[in-house]
Image (cartoon, rainbow, N blue to C red; front, side, top):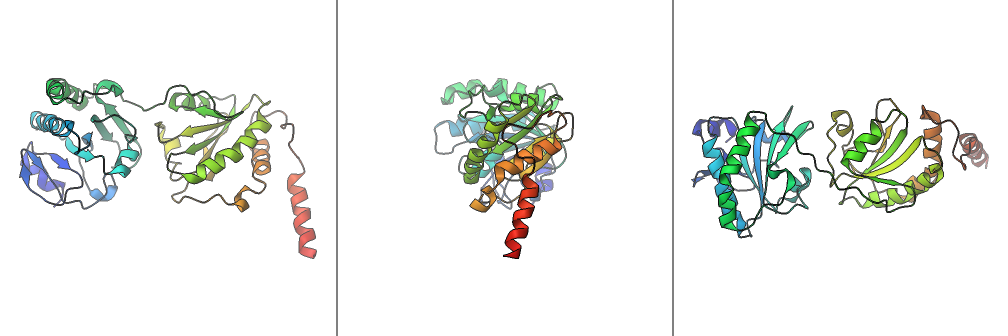
Amino acid sequence: LRLRIMRRLGPLWVVAAGQNFLAPRNGIIHLPKMCDYPDPDCEYTIKDQVILFTDRTQDFHEASVASLQAMAWKHAENEILHITMDYSDMATFRFFKMHDEQLPVFLAVRWEKEMGKHPFVKYRFQDGEALPTASAELQELQPALIGWESRFASGELVPWRKSEPHLASRSVSTVHLNASEFEDIYSNSLVDALVLISTDFCPSCKRVERDLEQVARRFAPVDSVVIGKLDFSHNDVVDENVSNLIKGYPCILFFPAGGVPRSFLGCDSMHFAWTDRDRAGFEDRVANFLVLESKVLQTPPPQYNATFDDEMDMLDGTLGEL
């Protein structure tokens, strides 16, 4: 059973993700879990979706679902898919960066191309303010939620982007960026930037960060080069040219001044362990890369070894003869 069956049922467009049965109940239709939402294989063709992120073990769950049900009935004439997402489905929570938010959360999503893939736009009810958890107070929010969805359907809402507050750098030289600062850095035509994209659930990212800090220290005196880090678990990247490069972690992206961004390390669909072999010579490899690729770097960093590659080639040759 696919979404086309649901579309004949008028206002009953509410999916409770993760359920294993199909039965209308209180205006909510539960579908068998045939896919991991929002994977493209789900084949939900309606691109406008309103998602309730909830926790069925908490007292606010029933009142939140009732609000979503009222929204679905009120907007039955619009092609909007309504979805409840339980906290037990942590992969989906992480995808939308809801794993550290206070529940419940109502989030509207507009998939611009294909579900589960960038680009997509998020709109959050009350722009990130925590909602009450008392049932009576949630019920009082129903008119506001219905009005919010009406503005979503008519294109009146302003997109919501998750961004941490300004972060004091926890390292000596690596710049810890939030989403807004990250955009400012990579759109700056006067500096080159090398940015590590990491997540909470990536053990290798911590090891890469420590090694990248050594590079940042070397380039600290150079104003035209920024070495930074963005925690992708807590910050949105809305630029399609950038987000499409991030397919795995750790991921180091290079943003040449005024040029096209590209991946420098990782960024593919598989995590890698970042072994001692990967670490060997990493600092020099990065330094050489920046000096060769930079459009604005006037002088090499203090410890930069201009003959590093030649010396490595000579060493390889010597070892080969032995």
